[in-house]
Length: 414
Image 1 (spheres, rainbow, N blue to C red):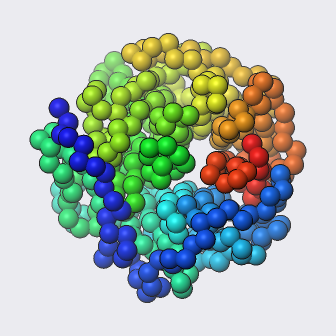
Image 2 (cartoon, helix red, strand yellow):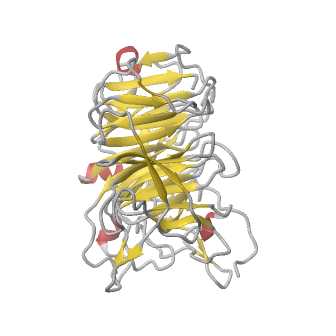
């Protein structure tokens, strides 16, 4: 049985850099306005108005600072600024690793995920093995002197079956398996989402080449994932690109083969537990037989639940599917194809409070399915390739950030 809930960790000492960051820029700025003073128009092209360029990713922290990712550069646009400030080659970028995604955190903080090659043998013999420090996740923060590295995340937080809190091992080992530090399996961060409201508001989930890691402040627990076994007993996991938060706070996970729905326990120290008494799963490791057999890739890139409770999965090759849960114990669930999009190549999804589902395509622009399930193209957003959709319901009115091959546009009021 799990130990009594001893509360959740803080941010592991975020007032400093934990001994691993660059503190040359001073501590975090403590005068964030924390107020949404961004333009109120229904549609604003931020690339034109605020000179944000063509970022590959966007994030928003708790103070409504807008963070931008562009190769080895990280930018931040603060409320009231007319253009972003940028910093180059921070943290893993300075070591030559390729940046993949950016995610907002607390006021003045963002997380940047990087790519590192998957290891042929992920089991390492020593915590001093240099491969531990490759790829993974950096926390950066805004200081009086600009953007600085706060910490390369390394603080694994986990409750053992005996009720002991384990922080393992010592040293800067990056993100490794919380249940056994010898295994360095999560090395490439492919997606991320911040919980926008509810009990776990502020928690961040990052999806990787191996699973999904839960982050709170500078602490993490890694990992869990949908999986399946072939007739020879071989385990297949798939790269996890799709990670979302359902209307009730469940975590939605989609990888190249399968998908799952997890109801997270409040304490992140249990996140990696497969004990059925914690982190219960509404769908454990499922697939849609209407799309493909279990052994074939489905390429899930988006997983969302709309306000009416319906689930939707977006594929990079097979279009948009409504998913109906047959049972928690069933591997196959029911899939219904959503027709009417100009392409089957999808990149992202965002469910909004007005009941809409926004659909990012690889070559057909941005589309909206309204609460009545009617599809239409959002012509106000330029660009054919949608790189990212980010919804922030904490702004008033809510903000939907759309990153395309033409830059960043923000829609309000959905």
